[in-house]
Length: 127
Image (cartoon, rainbow, N blue to C red):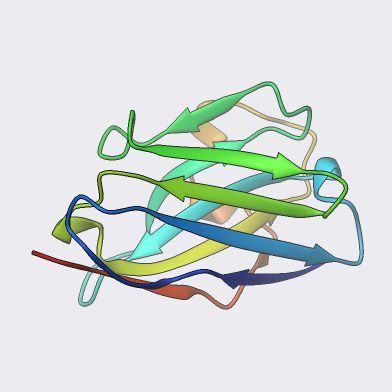
């Protein structure tokens, strides 16, 4: 599968953005999908994940209640709705796909679990 992330940009603190991750080659519903982010000078960190069944989600504490992951099977796209953005949300955001049938929130929060990665989209939140 090939993943194409888009939707990043510059937004003021308190604002919203919606990131998209368009997949080609296989339906996103056959993968566990995740979003990760990497701020300058920092390691990549987990943001959220959606199980292949679509009925399980898991969020990092830092984004819980503000970010929402969703999926549109018809468009073969996964979304990350980001509300109440903070300057500390500034990062390059990556979408990823995990081919394994094994799913737990612990495994899905590890970047090493994912087999395919998009190119990243930059989100900058100004104070």
